[in-house]
Length: 356
Image 1: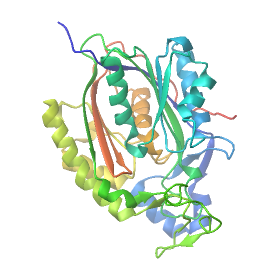
Image 2: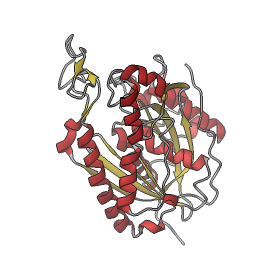
Image 3: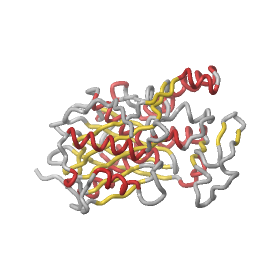
Image 4: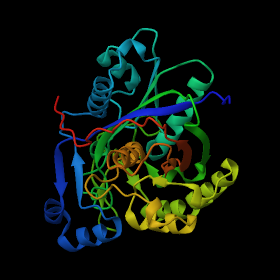
């Protein structure tokens, strides 16, 4: 039986920095009660934090190199490298080009960035699938990496306790059977861009001597015009309103019901939010997976990190039907449906130390 040309995930690798930010250190910074209250809602009790000299590109290179080594992937066999990040090394050139050079990829290999923040993984999968389905590429390396600690003010008690740093490399190749990427769903509400934004990013609002000065808001959080601003209540309401609707619409389009899924992987923003989404969609505990407690919210690397960890822990089986949904800045949301291959390889240990 013939199948439409499409991509499938054949390997993944998660790279986490060795630095850890625990509750005791946060309690000294923000007070025990504030930290305990946030942990009760989010379930995050530890975050992985990159050293000052380590960037998203460094973590991405580590994840990519280890994936390529574990699966004997020759650099010249990669046709495209897609780097999904909002914390690249430079405004120009694209960080994917930096990675291309550091990984020693072929001059015939394309390279570009995607800057979709938390929604980036399903978006990246859809782009990689299009490249493979149209015959433009046979082997695509999608890397999601962010070092959120570098764009959050250290005294922002609304964001510091939630976020961590990390990178995930995903290898995509043509599907040969029933497996592969089976469907996508994306959406945007651009009227809400101000709810997650870095105001003084250098263009619309140039950086000056004043934009780096600390500002304390009514909740006591400290940030500057050059660091990430989040309207937490607005983002929370957006997520629990739009994501269940998006998933129900996607299920109908894909011709499946909630019971057909072996697992639904969600962007790991906070536990209360995810519990509400799972409940609204109608999924049982056996279809849920959480991996934020010891690493935090990794932005665009969050949902692939969850998928990689579920794979490593054996929650994914050959032939499993899995949906991945992500949502955040933009305001944007995205989802992908995939069936895992029957010859599913082992996923490597996800705890990786990396130092430049």
